[in-house]
Length: 185
Image (cartoon, rainbow, N blue to C red; front, side, top):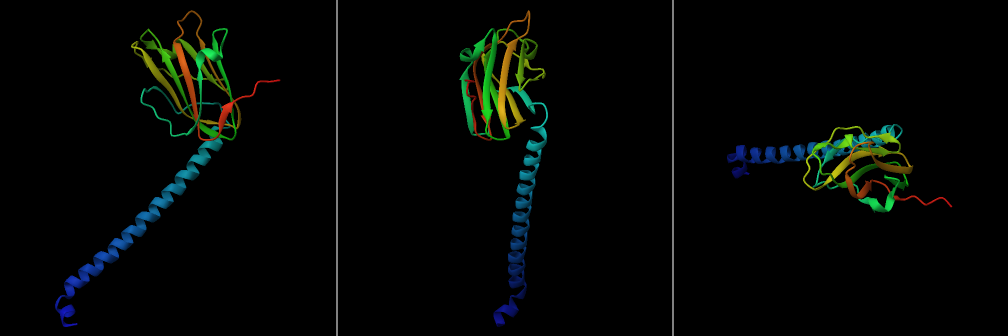
């Protein structure tokens, strides 16, 4: 007890440090939990609202290092789905879903890529400007769609009197189960 009274300031400082550390930890954990709950609600609302309107990505860019955060995916070689100069993929989403589309392409002209081809997702034309450098194969990324449950149609077609880029493969990543649509019988 004598030691405690003699070193009261040190003991009080240690006690205050411990209490402060506990309070700060509780506040940080509470803030993190609140933020995660807000983020979950935000994405659920974003999916609900945007999936009822025309299909539109939040980002359209050339990005050769893109990694989708969505783990469910399908991949198709474009030449397997080309008819009459048009590439058409018919897919099916099990539930409302966020999605990314990765189009691997080669184009020999430096230009605005989207002036030379039309990309439609569920009938909605993607109209962003994409500067393209003619130096080989690249990945055109259409990221963060919010799509409704059911049919998902991706169409790529050349523009009349323009040179269509060469399309290698197309990958569609989704937050929910995705598969190729069953052909009509």
